[in-house]
Length: 463
Image (cartoon, rainbow, N blue to C red; front, side, top):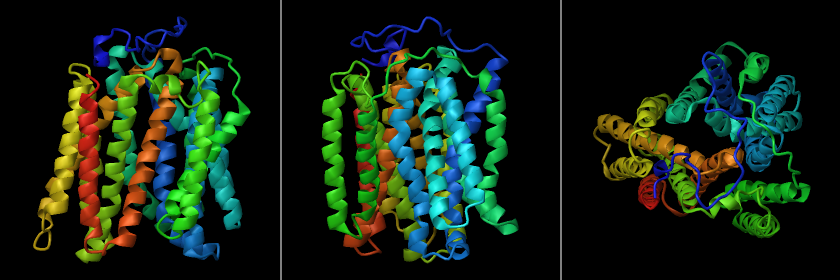
């Protein structure tokens, strides 16, 4: 059954106490201030990840390190982010979403300030790790804060607006980073975060105040959670270059996952939201999310290689031909947000996944040697499909959880996205190592189409 048939949006099998203190959304104009703070927070986390990649060659030169070593500026942020998402979500449920979100903004802002004055790569990576911890507190609680900021009838629009901001920040990140580097040094890439962080802190009291459960967070479970995700990210990235080490790290990650699940399974509100994953609508939404985000990342890696190394297009032209995708996602998100208030989310997600699959099949099969003009239309199809999938699926995932488990649902939502994106990058890394460069991008796009189709079909299984 689709969750829209339930008036409260919660799963019937989960009998949890309600949160009577929380009203159905915030009144205007407080709601507008809260939305601005939440969207500014997600912009910080997304934009910072996007603009740092552009500056890696400059950082490597200025800090006198190798290009391979400079990658840790990105990897350190990613590891901290994925390690801390679920613990921060649990902490938000325990202490209150507003308090933990504000603490995350403070940590992120302090980390940004430390990045600007880092004299060595080691200090810079440590500062980026601190940023990642703050970013995890921000990203894991966005969905929960939106749930209590908007009235339920407008929640789809709120999630769509969040998707719009994420898409725009992702699309504009490289351009903003390049523009900053044209007029100043790389430390200014991080310095621009400071005034935004301060502004959020000044208005954070406008955010909805939810009562915390005050439950104790198990430290050993937090350590096991870190031992699951840190080796997962590092091991996945090493599969193509050092497969034995990569496999060993992935095996260690799997072992820690088993231990974590066994430790948390008896708990009524586990760190990994096993209580939510036991329920069919939530589990299907997570699987569909991982499939479609994996398909998106496969495409984001495959297309630039195809355009530059197979067709010989310059980096600037590659960027231009990739731009219609995120821009279309940004345009489709608000429309899908309104549609999911009127139509079953399962059908919208299935249509979006199918549209994305069609676009990726066309990308894989089309011969662009004579003209790249069709690629613009094809990337628009892909962006339209992903935009129509993402917002309804995120709404379904959030409303599949009881109100008091909104933090866990939001943390799992962000984790599914990151795991899917990591899987897509790993798929392309393996393809580049086993297939000729002329064929690897096309194979990757075909695999992406299959993943998108699986995500769309899985969404239909919610009904």
